[in-house]
Length: 466
Ligand code: NAD
Image 1 (tube, rainbow, N blue to C red):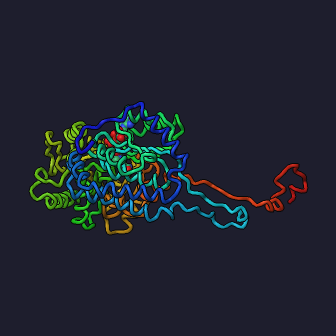
Image 2 (cartoon, rainbow, N blue to C red; image 1 turned 90 degrees about the vertical axis):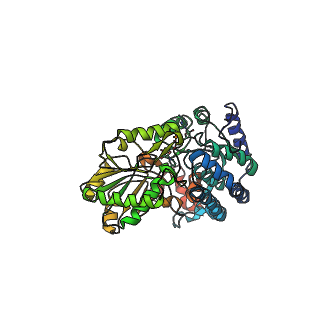
Image 3 (tube, rainbow, N blue to C red; image 1 turned 60 degrees about the vertical axis):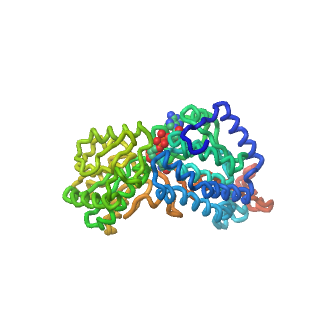
């Protein structure tokens, strides 16, 4: 495979063999040493760096992504995550002493950071490098053998990954399985030492059902409707730019994209005007002509998003244009949207931004709490009490003030949902932790029985009073 869009799927009968081979290689200790892990992490960074332009082309083919967006949203951040893991893996993997406690100190208790074994990651189409190779970095850093099933909906990038991984990485420890439902189903019949699933809640239920049969542990990175709460007294110009950027990046196909806006009724027009100005600044000749806006991944997602827009009872404030031949949907702001609108029925995953007018902040909080816990919750306000009121009275994967999306790339922060938006945490050290078994260990000296000898039968009254 190169940059073409034809994917050759992995034969179903090869899948158990791949699993068995990696099991054997894991037992042989292929990635036991930190040096071996670092070599693979470095190779992964070279894989991206050496093929930077080919990846840019594959993103253009899959998602119509602009070259700059591909660089900073995906390629540079993945290389940076490789560097972080390369520099810190010794520290991450170091055996940890338990906190000092006089009662247990003689046991010399420690926590050994051990790889789980052979782990599987099933990834979505929307960030086909960051969400495929990011988990690979963490899994390898933790010393696991790793199987990746990238998305069939981003065939140019998944194909490129499948071509390059065997050239750069050791096939004894990393394998790619290409395919769609039958191949993923076959993978899920096998017992894995951990499964990371990134995608929709609908498929997550299938994954969990299959994993339950083999008792494979699962982490879920899902989606949902991430709200934006706007304090009308905020710096509206900056807020509008950051919200529109979060909505338009990757044509809205971002799991943490702002899904809808909650704003007091009387401020709706001012907010929409600010959003329009941000839009016009981004796309001075109109979004249709702009090379900076991506497209919807396929016809079925295009029809789904267009269908939701066609059915809305809100009013299109600006945008609304679609072009089926290019799978293009213009950034579209819809105002006066109510809670039971078509646009509020599911995660939009496209460049449509409904604005829901509410009475006040309490009503906004109530609106959020009446729905599934979102993956991200955004608040735009300069007022600490406003921000705290929202964050303290809601639940979400992350709680972000005055920006969008940037928390995913912020070093030191875990990335994960809560409830229907996911369970478990990833990115950098948190991916390492997800694929690491905390193995309790102690070494009890013989002389301890002078103190703890009373635990042994026969039990006597004397021992009881001891
Ligand atoms: P999807 O659930 O359709 O597909 C994801 C993966 O599951 C693909 O590899 C696909 O081949 C596989 N799959 C699909 N149907 C399957 C089935 N019936 N049985 C077994 N496997 C199956 O998701 P998508 O459309 O690629 O991605 C969009 C979704 O992913 C959105 O909901 C988005 O919010 C979410 N997402 C979440 C994160 C996160 O980190 N939380 C990141 C990106 C995307």
